Image 1 (tube, rainbow, N blue to C red):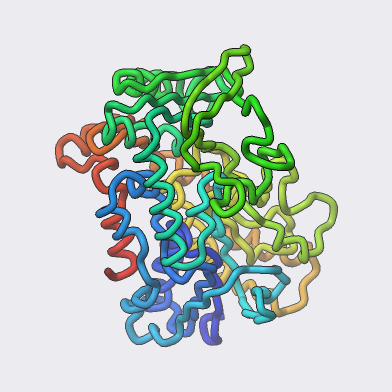
Image 2 (cartoon, rainbow, N blue to C red):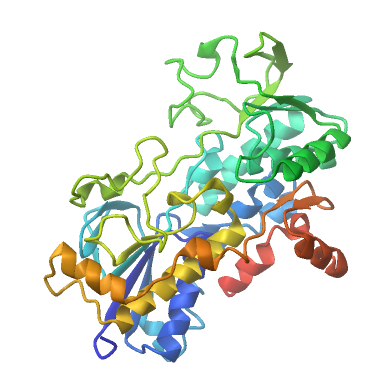
Length: 422
């Protein structure tokens, strides 16, 4: 297998995708000199989504978040010329090639999907160019600066992080966080982790409304169709959801909540419709409720006919506790190790195989379960501004204290710049 060209396509140039590209380039340099890597990404630049919440309150930090991909393959060594970047949006996935918007095709031996998710309420995550991203960022930052009473709906990592950043930067603003569950974050994390986070936020002056579903008192306030799930409802040009103005919302208990800026930090959903072109037997490749790609424990697609296709990061069906930056890195490394195992086993999808033969070949590759291998590596850290954080690992807490490397100080931007050779 190593004697011929091996083409691996990575779709999605965010944290997980760029990590996978780096792992694949190392594999090409050390073991498989004829391995070629193509990164397909709809943006012209890397957008550091991990630090998105810091950029909304810190202009200097925001200027570092848009990093070109032009140096990504600079450390590819003698194989660097074999790798390439394709700026295009993925349209359809087929068994041995992908289609991008505009009609182009990119053929692959192995495919790694890392397309992530987008927040409809945070339009900056849907931008395609650095210019558009900066324009949306400036508009969002201006709204935060003008607002005196801000309501966040959704107590996940993004909502909590935004509350912490704004409370630290603007201590005189009134900030409320409403969350539909009785505790913050998700059920995959411990009650103690959630309790510590809640206590820190309250100490910072944030008002918490837990166990409360909040909706606009007047549905037409946000959408002419009265729909809070519309993917277009939050664009500045049409619905002005980030416009600062007196607003009234109603909680499940009947409580009226007044604010002049309401920000939904819920509704993060991947778009995996591009898999509709792959034939399946009985079980769909995409979960209808969550929109996430169903994967096996090895991070391969559940359908045994496609052992050469992996899905990593926010787009796959792993538990919510696996939707953090540290987990994305672990998943990328695990998927690349799986691709190497398949190469070593000489699994070649170009040879016509029955589903049973393909499954047997993939089984012989002995790709371990990701959740087993990552069990002792996983640490969840939620930053509350520059100088506070809550972490699930006692070791990480001590390490951060000893070295002064709290996540909230830089939000891993230095690592992103290093990966992209900036």
